Image (cartoon, rainbow, N blue to C red; front, side):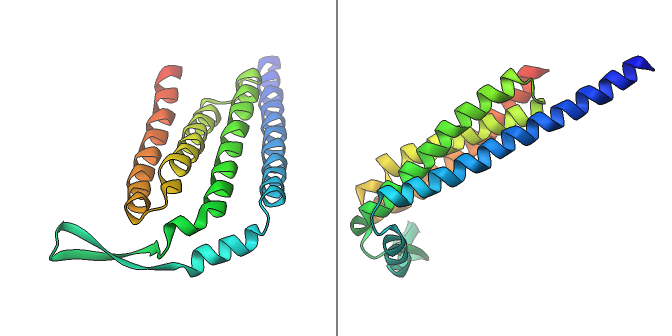
Length: 169
């Protein structure tokens, strides 16, 4: 009976620690959003300009006769401020995920939470690298390359989560 009581107490304690980590994550994300807007003048205008600049572009599917219409900026090179802010946000969230992972490991969080954090870390750092190295090139080709590489990053993120599960078994 005493052992069952200790297990319930430990489970409640873990929930409290997860709540604290979540509070740190949410608060830090809000601070990051505010910081990105503070250091990038007219970011609201830049975001609006980016979305107003989206237009349908024909993209070939194997041959010139077979195309699909996909949204892309009419002038991809004209959105450097937006791309920079996006990279700053993704990198900031990636760094935050490193801090969260350290907290989860120190507090012995569940495998599910640790795997989720590792997957998030891979995703956000990968997104930051892609925005900085592919999207910032500012061409229609780099726009579509970004989306292909983005799908790869999502896949790598899911594999990273699975690896954590396998390593914990």
